[in-house]
Image 1 (cartoon, rainbow, N blue to C red):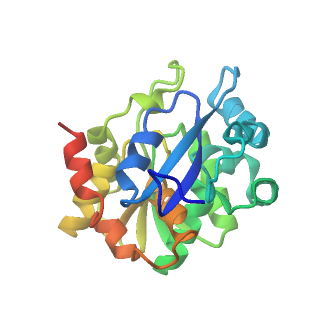
Image 2 (cartoon, rainbow, N blue to C red):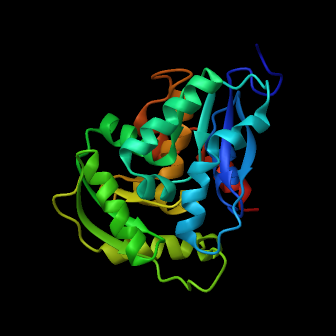
Length: 254
């Protein structure tokens, strides 16, 4: 079934409740003809970690908000929940979601794994917005997929906030890249956290070719959403250099 404003494909997007980044970046990244509808994952837990656990627990129920909307893919715009759940539990959830909706289902983390595989990247550096403990948990997740984390740098955040990741700016995100310094023996730099604004530093880095390729979990999530609908239509390099989305990023900044 064709949808008027999504003739090429409609994506169901699950977003953490207070996240202010997923929907804007997803809209910027989507090529013309694709669109998304959104449902918010809601938890009353008081810590980042407990909320992330809740997001996986309620994902199937939350996806019911899409009712019989003709979505072509189901994307979970959260990486942190994948680290805490682990690869096996994530794969179980995605199989459940896919069976329930009858469409491919994936998380930002699993999409990132697939994006790196498409690039042929095995050794990565991480730029994260997380507290140290969650950064370390993320390393275990990436290693469970056969990736090697060579180096990691984290943004300094005030953990007293409800979710301080969402208050980070693109400039602060770029500063995390600077913390990584000179990189050797690395195939890609990965910017984690769907709440951290990443498009500006990703685009600037890849166009300037100052570093190894830089990508983010939101870039990977958008790529995967289109890839499962139209495989190979938009090459990896075009995603990295903003061929179809750079102009929308510029216009979004006023």
